[in-house]
Image (cartoon, rainbow, N blue to C red; front, side, top):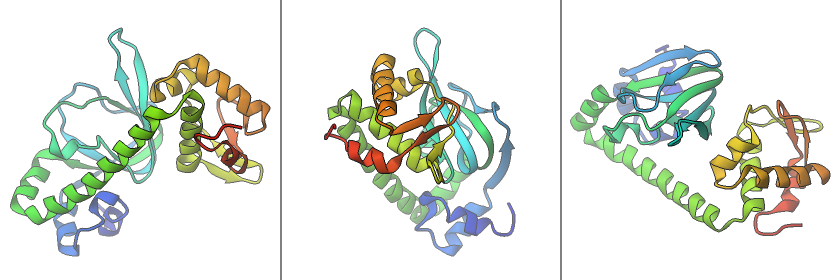
Length: 231
């Protein structure tokens, strides 16, 4: 890695509590890779070799259903890692990681990292604490989603896209994500028809505009569609 690698590592939440000395040990294991749109980082079912951290770009995680169709289950951007529990499991990659736009990734191979954690258990304790916090947050989101109706699930997903991947412009928050209504439906566990219906209503109400290649979220108006409180 480059000389500013330690500062780069601190950008990722997993390493936020590590001391300078601990970061230096992790830094020795890090490699960098660049990918172009459409390239695969790994495929579902492949032997898990490395865990990746996104410095730039966007990655979509795909899973194959029983009929052999691929579905987007997550979209990840700058500052995120994948797979989420990659350092603590020996199972194959749980999904396929494909690049949505040119990406710069940091990677750490699992075997040498496991050896580092065995050698320095203090690092392991700090990483496990951060991962525990992330798992609690994920559980809370899943519990909330379980009681949301279709309208609220779509609103929550659109708000997430706008906050995580949006680009503020004078006319609203521009979001450029090549995700279909069917893929959105699969991500939040409802039908494509339900996503169509909610999005069409949001367009009629002026909350969404643009087209499928780049849509505009008027986040100030989206606030009036608070989860659990439909207009």
